[in-house]
Length: 587
Image: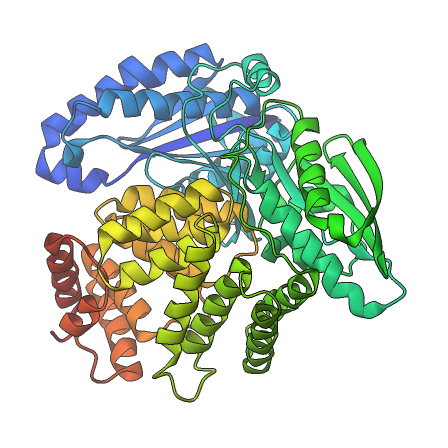
C-alpha cells in the first residue's frame, strides 16, 4: 500500500505556559481555572485573532498557537504579556496567572487541525527558559524579526534542551509597552523617537587601531576607545555595549555584520589613531550593520591638548547622526585631568587593572600614584586608585590587608571631593555602603551613579544587586539582565548575581539555570542551589547538593552565611535561613 503524503509547512509557533500552575491549583483549583479561562477569553483569544494566529492546542496550563508570520507571533506575544499584566493589577500577587512564552520558526507536520514536529517541540522547550511574564525566541525566530522589529533582545547564549540534538541559541525579549503595535507602528516609533527604553538605538565601539610608529602607543588607542564608550554611555537613549565585550575583537579581522550579530547591536563604530609627538590623527566611522552603510565618517588632525574636546565632538556627532532623538542624561561632565602626562598614566593604570592579575594590579597602583603626583586634583586617578586597591583586597593580591581598606576609602573620598560627578566614585561608594548595611546611602550613590552613566554595566548590575537585597528582587532580575545585554561577554559573577536575584524572587528554576552557568560554584552558591531544589520538592537533589556544600566547607552554617548577605528586611533573612534549613543544611 502506498504511504500517505505527509503535509508540511513552515510556521511560527508560540508556546505559552502558566507559571507555578501546580501550586495555584493546589491552593484554589476552582479559582485558578476561572482566572485562566478569563485570561483566555479576554486577552489571549482576541490577541491571537488580531495577529492572524490560530490556537491549535490547549493543555490545561499550556497553549500552542500557529502564526503564518513570526513578526505577528512576536507582536502577539508582547501584547498578550502586557494584557495579562494589566488584568493582574487588581489581583493578589500570590494568586496571579502569569505566563512564560517561547517562539520558534520551523518546519511542522499538519494532521487535520493539529500540528507536530521539531518546529513545535523547540518552541515548547525554550518557553521554560523565559522568566515569568517574559518571552524567549529561538535564533531562527530572532533572525526573522531582526530587520523588521526594533526590539531589545538579550542574548542568553546556547542552551541544551530536551530531545533536541544540538544546543539552541536563545534570545529574551524585553517586554514593556508595545501592546497593539503593528510592524509599521514600531518602525514609526523608531523614526520619531517616541520609543520607550526598550526600543532605542544600540551601538558598539570597536577598539581603535593603533597606527602610530611606536607600538607603545597601543595604550593611547585603547584609552581613547574606552573614553568614547564612556562618553556615549551618558546618552540615555542609547544602548552602549561595554568595553569588556567590544575589546574581545581587538587585533582580530572581523566583519561588522558578525560583530553586530554577536553583540546584538545595529550600529558599530570603528577607526584608528596615529599619535606623533604633539599631534594626533583620529579617523572614525559609524556603520549601520543592517545595511553595511557608512552613515558617517571623519578624520581629525589635532594637537594632543585638544584630546578631551575631540572626544566630546566625536560622541556628540555620533549621537546626533544616529536616526532618532538621542538625549544626554545630564550636561554635567566629569572633571578632566589637568596634565596630559597624568592622563597617560591613568589610561595605562586602567588597562592594567582590567587584566586582574597580581603583577598588573601592583603596576597599575604604581602608575596611578604617578598620575596623582603629577596632578593631585585628577579625580579619575584617585577613583581608579580606590578601585584598584579594592581589586587587590578582593583577589588577595596584597599580603596584609589591614591598611588597604582605609587607603581605598581615603582615595574614594578624595576622588568624590574633587569631582562629585564621577560615576565610578558613586558606584564604589554605593557598594561599600551596601556592605555596611547603610541602605539609604547606598541608594543615594547608586541613583547618582546611574544618572551619570546609565549604560555602565557594573553600575547597572549593581542596581540589580541593590534591589535584590532591599525587597525588590523581581526588578533586580531585570536590571541584571540589562547589564548582561550591555556586556554580552560579561564576567561570570553576573550569573551569580542573577541566580541570587531569582532565588530571592522565588523563581527557583531560573535561579538553578543561572548558577549552572558558573564553571565552579563555591559553597555559598551551592547552598542557593540546594535551597532551590528543596523549594521545588526535589529532596534527593537537595541532599546531593548539600553534601557538595559540606564537602567544600565542613563548618558551613546557614545562620552565619545568611548573616553575610545584606538583606534590609528581616523577613527575607528568615525566609532564606528556613530555605537552607529545609534543604538540610546545618543551622
